[in-house]
Structures are given as C-alpha cells and as structure tokens.
Image 1 (cartoon, chains in turn blue, green):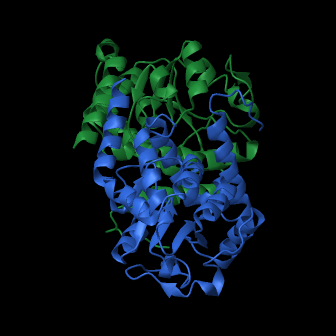
Image 2 (spheres, chains in turn red, yellow):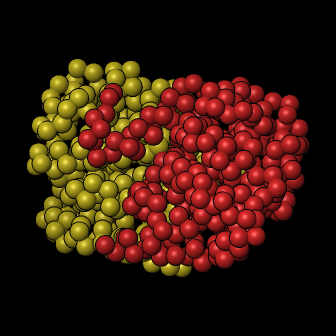
Image 3 (cartoon, chains in turn cyan, orange):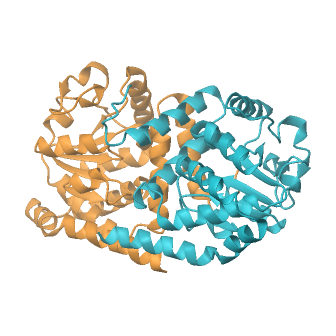
Length: 248
Length: 248
C-alpha cells in the first residue's frame, strides 16, 4: 500500500516500511519490530524531534568518538534497515570502524548486514562470521561475540538501539558506550556513558554535522566538551520534558 | 530460546512470543508487532498493572455492554493471539457477539482467527468472508467491512487495539465504542465513548469478573453506572498518573 507524502504519519510509516522490508530480506527480527514500536511511543512523547538535551548529548558523544583511540560504531538489524548510508557517512567523518553486532546472531544475518553496509559505501565491516572471535565478559549466548580488532579493542563504542544486558556488559568492560535509545529510563540509557535520547535516523546525521565542526578542534578541547557534559543531569531533564509535554 | 519464569520480563516475553507465533501462522501482521511495541512502552509507563482509572473504565464499559441491545466484541490479529479464551469467556458472560475485524483484511487471516476463536469455545464468529457485506461510512479499503448482524447493527462495540480512523468512524456512525488502548493520548482513546487504558490481557478478564457482579443489577442501575462515568476526566487523571510516575 502506497502512502501519500501528505499523510500525517508519512515519515513514521516510511521507516516502518523499511523495517518490514528488512524483515522480508531476513536481517530484521520480530523483536526488532516490537522494539521499534516501543521507540515510536517514546518518540511520540518527545514530539518526534531532536530535543535540545539530545543535541547536547550528540555533541558530547561526537567529541568522545573523535578523541578516542579506537572508536567503533556497532550496527544491528534495525540500524542497517533504517539508516545504513548515514552510518557509513558518520564512520568516515569521525574515522570509526563499523562492526555488525547482533542480539540474535546468525551468519546469514551478519552477511546480509555487511552487504548492505558495503553497498552503502563502507570500506570494511568488522564482526562478521569467524572474525567475531572474542566474547564480552558477563554475557551468554551468541550476542557476547565481538571482533578483536573492533569492539573488543575499542575505547569508545556507539551502540544505537542496544539491549540493556549488553550495554551493562560494555560499561563493565571499561569501554565508554554511547547509546541511542528513545527511552530515557531504559537500562541502556541509564547505563551508558553518554545517552542520546533521539531517533537513530535523526541522531546519526546530526552527529555527522557536528563532527564536521568538531574535528577542527584539538584533542584537549574535545575532551573538555566530554567532561563538561553531565549525563545523569541531562537524562533527568529529558524525563522532565516528557512530563511537561504530558501537561500540555 | 526458552525463558525462565524468574526472568524479570517473563510476562512481557511470553506475550511477545505468542504474537510471533501468530505471525508465523499468518494472522498477526508486522504492523501488529510494531503496535504491540508501542503498547509495551505505555504499559511500562503505567507500571504494567491495572491502574484504578482503568478499573473504573472497565466497570463502566461492562455496564454499557450489559445494558446494550446488541453488544459486539471486535477481534483483530493481536487480540486473537494474546487472549482468545478470555475473549470467548467475556462474550459468553455479557452475552455479546464476537466479530473478526481486521485492518489488513484477507479471507485467510479471517478464517485463521475464526478457527482460533471456535477452538477456544466461541459458538459463532461474525464478520468472516462474505458475511462482512456492509461498510462503515467514512472508511476506505477493506477495513471498512462489517457484518450486518454484527458491528453494523450493534449499539455498543468493544474494540481492543483499534486504529484511530476506525474508532472515529464508529463514533460518527452513532455507536458507542469502548476502546482498549494503552496510550491515553491516542486518537482511539480520545475518540472512544469509554476508553480503557490497560493491557488487553488484563482488561478482558477484569471485565468478565466485573460482569459476574454487574449482571445481577437491572438495566436502569447499569445505565446510571455508565452515566456517572466521565471519560474525559478519567483520561486526564491517567495522563496525570504517567506524569507523576515519571517524577519518581
């Protein structure tokens, strides 16, 4: 069914359609669709726009990634379906690696996502097949697997749409995790070093734009941007914003 | 993957699993999965329990259905997947008809849902195949179709998990619609005659329990319960409750 661009929910229906296509191709899961619905509800409560607190977090996150030794962007099925080109562009702008990192890991899904990323201009994709030979401590099952040259040795990891267990395990392993999650109260948002409460399709291009400015700065200035950012306070402000939105 | 009953999200994972099974069988849609995720987010904000305002709405709704001439329960894919037995039990307790009513209507899906309802004890299921020969005015596509003996001639319709367009069309056609929708701000909740902001898996059994008491009362008493209920005020209280929940 084709939806008119004038439909009030055109944007939202477009992204749903992209996920459903990804599911038909075999790399988006049913859990991915349900998770997307949860995100939609919080996006709706936030007014479906990048709120100022999200932009501040995106700036701090970009400064963190730019000042890291080995920054990695983790990509799952939903992210690959929603904004593969934006991911590749951000990775190039901040000089980060891209690693496929799945909750329900199968070689078929890994290869499909790798293919999409390569098609969208990625030079190399980490974490596919046997390359994911290390395990993050504290996690069971296939979702513990990471690439020794990617997330395993990363100091900063951008995890859009991550699950709570893995966000916690990443934090415990000493890495600085940047989450993109529309629920400010989720375990992922509460655990991350920097929590971006924004839709991934807005957050990633925003970070690229910010990076084009920030990469002119030296490392010390970048680190001071990160240090000035108070994640807990920022999250509290976001919850307050949802609360206020509900009063109107 | 089998989940331990001790898992903090056991209940929520169980219902997700039921939907995924329904999808594999062909009667739950991808949109149904996304809609479920949206519901999960609001259920989370409500504390995943029946709040007092929801119970009050369930009581008024049960009184309405019991005092109606031709009450009908509308069933879609998600409802059939999540609580078919509870639907049949409620229909029997309040002497209501059950009608299959789908957004993405195909005879295959209708028949599958009919089969599930019959297997769970329903005597008759309305709205399947050619029986859905009437159209609700103001709606396009297949989702306008209703059964002349069911929703078409109903005075009160219980619509769990309904979409906004159809909820509006039902209201305009002069029927009293009772919605079950976890988002108190949705067009469905805002349009319904009585809006139950609760999870369908809790709301339906609650209504059956309430009906066992209320059906002892006469029609006049039932109508006064309905009249004393203020839907707009009740919805406002619910939004306030979410707001307060976010402060804690």
